[in-house]
Length: 234
Image (tube, rainbow, N blue to C red):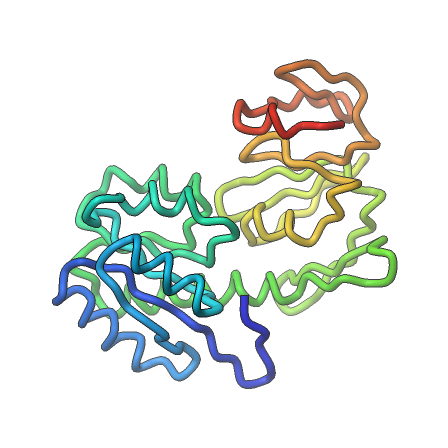
């Protein structure tokens, strides 16, 4: 991700194999002074090249690309940027939310709907920028509306994902913030916390009971995802 000073500029790319759709997106992007289009392409191979060359904050991704489809491509990206999916098909919305998609645009895309999607993206970027590392990483501040909430890392039992929101659970209360779980995961010390499921991050020191499929924390039984079992070293 790029660093954003007072005058923010977000780098974005378009991955779209329909020339007219790509031109419309490029036109929409050009109207926003905070968006900087650094490249556009029509397939996943070229998109991988753009991501390796540029620090990209936002990718507009068509799902029906030649050779490698959009979601398959997205799953292969390590530390992907925020993604706004573009497609003519409704049935992919649920899968898109599972992959931490910032928003989901149906073609043909009205400009007003584009603006809504960009607003969601900017909110997520502001939340990410508000994750501040401090000395010895004993607490973080998380942006919540117009204020910042201080979270003591030692107080966290587990973090739960609810689509574009997260719930941070302590022993006695929970805090809800609008950001994908993948972004707070980047801010946490992996020696203290680990991902056990696409929807859960846990504090290693708070584990009460563990098995191959379930981890219990503060009386709550949390599932261990199949993908995370080989990586789970507690």
